[in-house]
Length: 184
Image 1 (cartoon, helix red, strand yellow):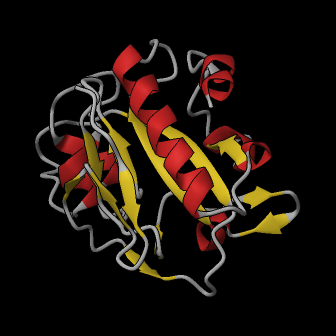
Image 2 (image 1 turned 135 degrees about the vertical axis):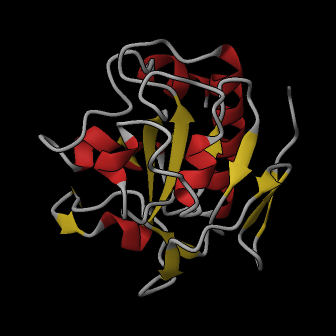
């Protein structure tokens, strides 16, 4: 599943991605977009292709479907993008809006990373390798982001675990940072 991506700057949309609007976003406090945060998510944990992440990001997850969902009931979370294990890319929040992906966070001494970052979720877990399709799509998308948002540089690409240490572990030890960054 290889798609050629581009960014429509006025709308903040990734052309080539499926669009599912999440209500879990708001206006950024400024136009600055200077950080890219890589995450992983699977719902239930360790299970893939459930469409539960889509429902979670849209506040439509039936928390009676699985015991784990009771732990996340009421949370309002979103990322800008989700890259599924098949390589399918879904956009939930335009890049020019603030997605609610980082939570309490700090990068380079600056708090509230949601204010100035883009969040990309990879369907996965800390203890399973990601797919070739996910790396291919992530590299293509990152190249577009680096072009359209020049304040994001390779040194300003980080993991959720790096901006929320002790609280978050993703994208986890199975994410191959060398493979990803060397491909850019």
